Length: 389
Length: 82
Image (cartoon, rainbow over all chains, first blue to last red):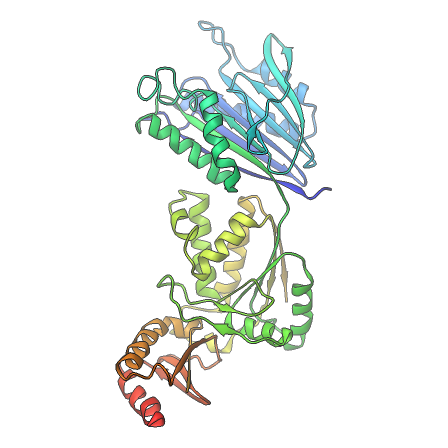
């Protein structure tokens, strides 16, 4: 196992007036490998949606079962009907198979070719043309490097703006130029795909003439992050919990007042609580030498969970947590953007001060917060480990 | 004089932010900037259902509310300083 990992994110917009998207992205992750399939069903609406969903599901499931890529392609190529009038298959597809975080195998059938940005510049990789059941399919094998950015698209992206902003749409070369400029900023895959698709939306004048999807795979170094939340159920476990927490590599975040007192005592340092209320509903943070971030507990983590849910869905609050300086926003940036592997150290102590019916805080809420937050982070593609004390 | 205001979970919900604002105003009005150091404090274990915990030097006062703030400042801060 090397120290690379992949960050995968995608976004779609629907053909104007359609409720369903004719593009579909299917991701199957297994240990250090991942299979990403982007399928674009011909046309739009329900027929296209069913075809692209079927295509991407069949391919990703077969590949996850370990079948060779040629066999998957042959099956799907033989299964997909060719339109009698137009002589084309109903669903095009792009497969990116990340193998043990060292190699990417790309199989492309009629979608715009995958863009690879390496060292902030377009990298022209070689392709081998194959003919499987009369279908022209391109295959490439690429050794991964840190900071590689793979961009798979449906043709709705290069078609953006046809007849509106551009005569011939947003050409692939223009998309490359647009993405090259974004590459050094260190955006996550989800953010990069959102920026690209939002640009398409603008070029279409808010009324897309086709479904448009972008799926980004970003190769990055693993970044471990450790989060301590709550004192241990048994006081005698304090030192053991702290020793385990601080022995781990990567940044250290501590959430909770009592928890930070225990940590400060363990380290023999002072806690300096700040009095600046950056965001009204999030309590101030504090500082302890040797700890990267110290925040209040349940209220802050609850806010992080709210942001996590939003980020996985509509992603409307990105403008808040990406810049604000309150505890919750800072945790969001560390967990959602910076970290790839997150270790939670959760104490099960019941805080006697919180056993008060007037306070909207109780033990169950805390345990639920951890469970739901780790579920969200898993959906963001993070590797999560939770240890209870 | 050091005044520490708790900004832990419970006190936050009981209005620490408002109290911090009130105390900053009171310090300015009485021109005590050079005599009082205002800091935050993480949960000191004095959570209650009334108000915010404030520590003035070594004395701990619990349950301070925005309504009772004037009296608190008069009794526990101004009297001590003068």
